Length: 228
Length: 45
Image (cartoon, rainbow over all chains, first blue to last red; front, side, top):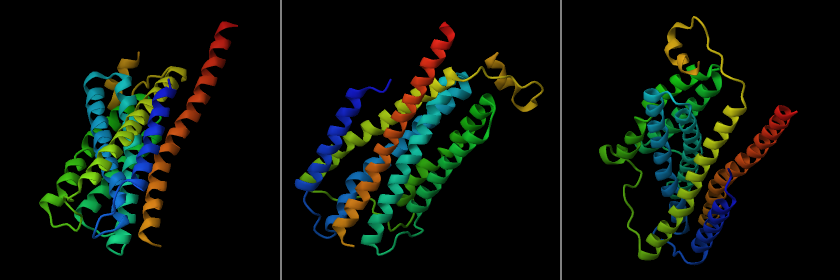
């Protein structure tokens, strides 16, 4: 269930990426050492988008097929998306403090990123606040489908609007190599966390007492029907 | 705080959040596995 080999490999790759960053990667000429935040910031941002995409696809899957494992997958990827988006925001803020002299500025990219984080935090809150498993699955699937609309806005914000956030950075070859190396442990970590959380939800579901169908619940009787 | 310290802070928080969450899941899985064993033993007796 929690494949030790996978996690040991991911841990070793993380250690190798950190060592590479400390020993091999050169400092950028104008920004200095602070540019090195970029090697964590960008892979975390891409993985945030991918986690949101998995959540979106799984939510559509649940709405069309009504299978519980779609709901578990959506919940797991939504949870990991919050974790990754937190990293994107925190590393971005630290970079901004050093580069711009302020922790936060209401630029379109930063604002849409904060909205994305809030949307998925609310998604997790919705999941914990609804007791009925069927209602929870349906409402959160509809919500996650709508919440995903912010992802293209985050991506396009720097292209469509005037923004202080850089759109592209020119990197020397060792920097490109470092970036490529950093993608590996971050992608492995993100995928591993989604799968681990997904399996944990499935086990918890198997251990939970059978779901009760709520009679006379007009809004979601159609959703509760599948559990019978 | 200089640039180097900001970089260390960013990586410590970023990797801490990811690996901390992995550790949390591992711990929860241990609990679920224990509950599952107890449930299985209860079912057999």
